Length: 523
Image (cartoon, rainbow, N blue to C red; front, side):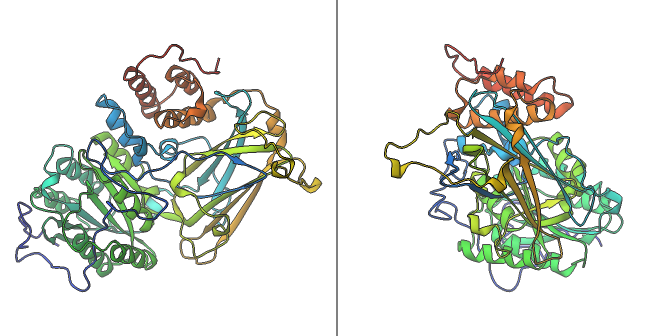
């Protein structure tokens, strides 16, 4: 197929003769100025003009009151790259831009490979002394999906959906989009197909589906920015192209590259959500790639990626583009399990209080765990997911004191049958082509609570990243833990990305007003 000629400037409102026009129903863009739910609150631009969904720091729970913690997995990495962008510019990131679980999951850890594809995850648990509180312990839960060599993954039908509106006319926006997607084009296989759709004042097809990397890169080179932003129309057209070239048993995905500044078109959020969910259920997923600054709509891009069973990454550099669209391409595209949920039940004989670090907007009701109708996160080949809990051993001073009146006191009846288990971990998931969930269960040995050792190795690094995220969020439960303490905890980091993390802690420290004491409990 040959590239179709289109003028991607000032208006796209009159799409040229070579471009396809969307048909059928008009789906709107979401209005994220208003609350998605009563729980989420208003999403309004912060001082930078960017939009982030408010997320309060996860609360402490008494095991006697709420023994079960349930959440959907999160494999997004956008928050880490976005935080890095702020820090490298000498600015403190907005609190709501920091999603600690995405920062933890930006890195890979030494979890074992699963032994059986029918149970596509390994589950690892370990316990260490908290580095910032002598009275608490850190419980880490790690999941690792089976790896799939790039050469063995199924064929992919991809549609690049590129925002070419006027807001993308910045060096860190459309030029970086073109470079990033060219990187991806270099990695497609002979069985893969790529089409390119653009949108500004209207939407049009720039490139029909092809397997020729040179045609893809040539089409990308023609793009320039201008006009308003008809994102809903672009999504509708992209889904239409994806359906036209659907590969049964393959990967069918739209990759939306934008700053998220949707500003024209019908503004019925529910219609857009209905479109994304319908296409997701028919096997077409959605990944969002965020670019630029000043009007970044992080809230919208995270939300629609979640709805579309895809992932959300923020691209702030050519290095990040290579990491996301080259090194991690196979795991990003090929889903090995969908609707993955984690549930941890704490045993009151051993734990009195706990808190989950991060995952604020991934929390699920306890009853949602067994409900196969409830959508949750998807995991790709080789993906890892890490969750970190801080727990208070029974009989130890916790964050909350007991109540004065006997009848109000938080007590729990314990069962001898559960003695020896600190907690019980359940993992529920569906195979990619399944509708009925499967279950993996693992007990956590209570003897690990006796440890007085600080986190070591990989666990130390994961805990350091968790502490860094929480410190940026203003988490008061970290006590006096300082950035230097976080660096000591991270240890001698190996590899480019971990060494970069150390540099980011230094940048964060340089941007703060020194306090009288920056020492945490860590030695």
